Image 1 (cartoon, helix red, strand yellow):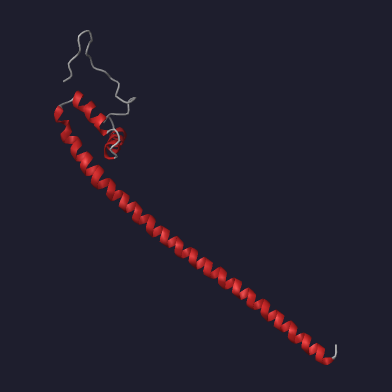
Image 2 (image 1 turned 60 degrees about the horizontal axis):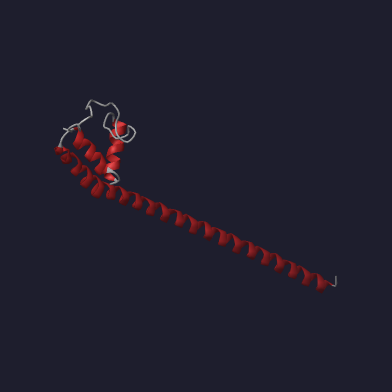
Length: 133
């Protein structure tokens, strides 16, 4: 337990640290605090707050959160996100290749049609020329 310095009055305070965010009063705040701990951003401050408030043994709660959460679960989550992104990216690349192939075939088909029209015009012109037109 914290000891009051001389000249100060120790009493119960209803405000939570960090503008009221650091607490386990409800599920939302608890999830926020666990997220802060597993991202390793400010987890030691939260641990110190709880050690001063409750007991020095509170580190037994924070060790599994930090080591299992930060070094295992967070990396596992990032690996799943990376894998999902890779599959989606590959799928869109395949769709893009199919679209480019269709566009190339359409362009080639249009060129072939233009060539056929030109050939037909040339044949008609030759026949007309042969007739004497």
